[in-house]
Length: 525
Image (cartoon, rainbow, N blue to C red; front, side, top):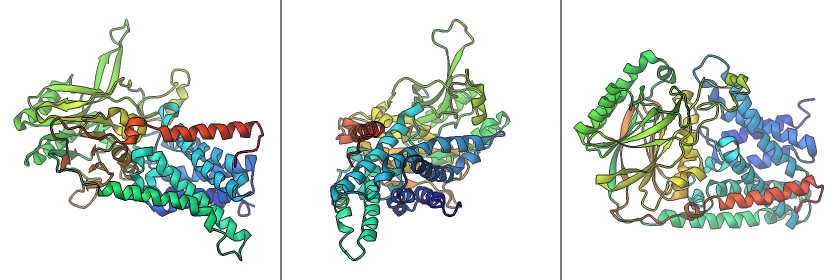
C-alpha cells in the first residue's frame, strides 16, 4: 500500500532538495527538486496534495537539519529537531496544496502563469519564514546556488529571494516541459514553449551577473585583519571549570596571530568565559593585548545591566554582545544582539507554557538589543558593523547595518553547538548573500568554522583550515580586506536602497491567489 502511494516519491523529492544544500551541495538538484515535489502530487488536490507536500518538506528538513541532534545536552534534542522540522514542513505543504491541481494544465498562457505564480508563492513563503516568530531564514532556497557567482549577482537587486524565484520558476517550467512531452510524444518541439520564457530571463540574469563580476574596482587600501578560530567544544563553554583552559587557547592563538602586522583582531561569539565589564582579570587580559600590540579588537562577550523600570535592584537583563576595544585598551563601543535564536537564546511563552523548556538546552534567556551600533576604528578611518550569530542570515536585518561609508560587515558566531557538521556550511552559504545584496565585504569569525571573508561580489576569498586541512579545527588566519579610501562612499546596491521590494511583491501576489482559492474562485493560472 505504501509503495503504491505517492509518499515514497515525495520523500525522495524532499531528499533531493536537501542534497542541493550544503554540505552535500549538489546545486543542480535545486533546479529539479520543486518540480519533483509537484510531480509527486500530480493529479491530487486538497488534503491529499497537502499531505504529499508535507511529507516532502518533512523529509527535506529532517535531513538538512540533522545537526540539531548534535547539541551536547542531556534531555531531548530530538524533540527540537522533530518539532522544528515539522513546523517548517508546513510551508512546502501549503505550496503544494495551492498548486498541485493545476500542474501542466490548460493553455500555454495558463501553464506559464502557473509556473510563474508557483515561484512567487514559494518566495512569499520564504518571506513569511524570515519574519514569523522572530524569523528563521535558514536554508532559503537561493542559498543552494551560493557558488554560482554569475547567477547570485541578481541578489544585489532582488535579494536572495530573486535567486529562489528563478530556480523554482525554472524547475516548474521543466515539469511542464516533461508533461508536454508525455502528452505529445511525437512532437519534438512540445517542450520548448514551456521553458522559453524562464530560459530567456535566466540568460539575462547571467549576462547581468557576468557584467558585475567583470567590473574593475580601483585599487583600494586594505585592512589587515586577524581572525581567531579557537574551536572550543560547546560542552567546555558550559562547564565553568574549563574556563581558564579554553580562554588560554584564545589568548595563545591571538599572540601567535600578532606576530604579523595586524590592524584588527576578531574573536568569535562566546570567546570570553566571563562578562568582560565585570571581571577584572578578563578585562585586563583583553586590554593588555590591545595595548601591547597597538591593535583594535572586536570580541564577543555576554553583558548584564539592571533591568530598566524595575523596582527590584536584583532584576537584571542579560545581553549577547560584541565589544570594540581600542589600541589604548578602552571599550569604545558595545553592540547587543537584536535577533535572538528562538529556543537557543530565549524561550517564547515559557511563563505560560513551561513545558516548552523540553525543546531547548537553555534555562533562561537573553534580552534583545534595540539598535544598530557601528564600530568606528577612528585612527584608521574605518567603519564596520557587527552581526552576531545567525543575524547574518537575515537579508532585511543586515541591510539596516550598512551606511554609505561602511567598509565591511563583521559576523561573530559560535556554531560549536553543532559539532563538525553541515550547519557551518549552511550558515556560510546564506551569509554570502549579505555581501552581494549590500555590495560590500563580509568577515566571518567563528568558533569552529566557517571562518572566512567574502568580497562584495560573493566570492569566498579565503577560508581558514587547520594544519590537517579541516575547517573545524583551532587556529587563525590573516586577511587583507579592502576598505574605502578616506572620505570615499560606497555606491549602494538597488537592494540596499529599496530592501525586499521583490519579496513583498511576491507576497502580494500570493495573498491574491490564496484569497481566490478560499473564495472558491478560479485561480489566475
